[in-house]
Amino acid sequence: MPLSLVLRYRAGTARRQARGWVAVLNLVALAISTSLFMMGAALTSIWVPHAFLYSLLGLLGGFALGIIGLWLSRWERAPQSLHYTPNRWLVFAVTLVVTARVLFGLWRGWHSWRHAPVDTPWLAAFGVAGSLAAGAVVLGYYVSYWMGIRRRLRRHMGA
Image (cartoon, rainbow, N blue to C red; front, side):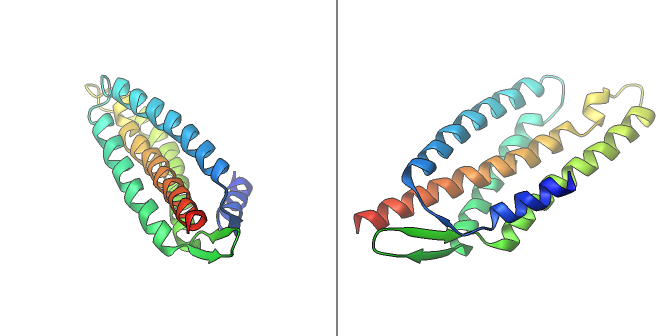
């Protein structure tokens, strides 16, 4: 897992050419993923209090981070192309959120399994709502980031 996180960070900070078809494909895939994620969060909220609310707040926070990411990205314009390099610190922060939530989830799962109060469901004590919020941050970040890339590319090619 540590190697995959390092590789994900390296790929996330690489200079890339903005391509319209890649942005559209990513947006369609992310729209499907986000819809399924939010439906799952709504279903989970039957058993875990505030799961949907935390997911929605995480998604909104991710949208805001994506907009900040667009502002902080380095953009290079050429007559026939547009290149971008995502901000290293923001990519690191998003990667760190996922890593911290996975590690916390493992620790919290072990702890809640052994020490959960009798009247509290194990799933709620596990911290599922927080995990959903962390996942929603990542989804929201990438949805707004790819929307911004598509918008900038259309403006660049139209100009």
